[in-house]
Length: 331
Image 1 (tube, helix red, strand yellow):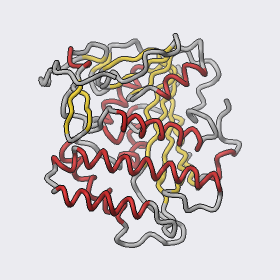
Image 2 (spheres, rainbow, N blue to C red):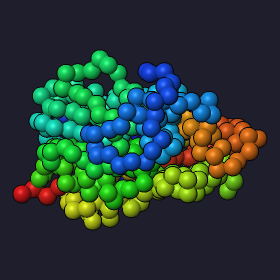
Image 3 (cartoon, one colour):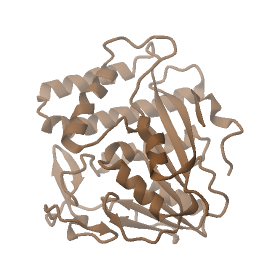
Image 4 (cartoon, rainbow, N blue to C red):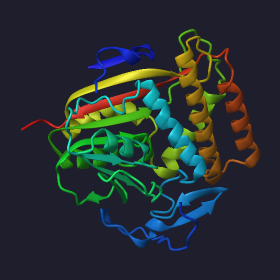
């Protein structure tokens, strides 16, 4: 079942109730590891293009792990919670999940809050960088590793969560297969991400809209340099079905880009979305566009034009945010 709509469905009945400094010890080799068994490079960071990046699996992942990225991740977390009226997920996982895994946990906000929501559950966050806080709930822990590696964990998770992850990994087929294998029968997976297809209901997006041009610019860069597919959300239903999942549902919210909406709540969400986008433009300008050969002036022009466009209240653009959840068949 798939449901589309603007953000007005927020409160409708179908929603479930409910740092380290730079080090030089990174290992530049590509040797294989298994999930839960990592090299000494996990504690290392490198500075490039004015940003800090993880050293583990150096070069594979172009997203920084510094304070600016902390701001962006925190804002995305607040934005999605606000979008869902304070909820952290939509999958019908019940009131007593006992083992939860957050894949690509980043700075760990979601994992920590889920741990606080379910104090009897064991919550594990996995990320390439050791950037999570030290003071966490006793039922939460974090693993530094690559979710695209082989997993060595027992197959008994009740819930697997991926947020803003599938668009920045190479092997979605492999990751979904690993999730399926490591879920309990009847367990759930939920994926949350943005599909970069700008639209408007009143045709106010011009043909030369800079935000559209920005996504058209970075799409081939991310695909050719890193193997990412930022439009993977369009394939998720098929990929989940091929992995063996059933009872799949998708809910799509139209997130305003900028503070153009009349409704105060939508204006707030649109402001969040604009700031998240601008921070993402900064991320792309730091490493991917430079390494793709774009000149400094070209990149500065992109940043300037996108900033102006995303703040133009006469353009009523929105981006679709997808929530997709599915179940491993019960025994």
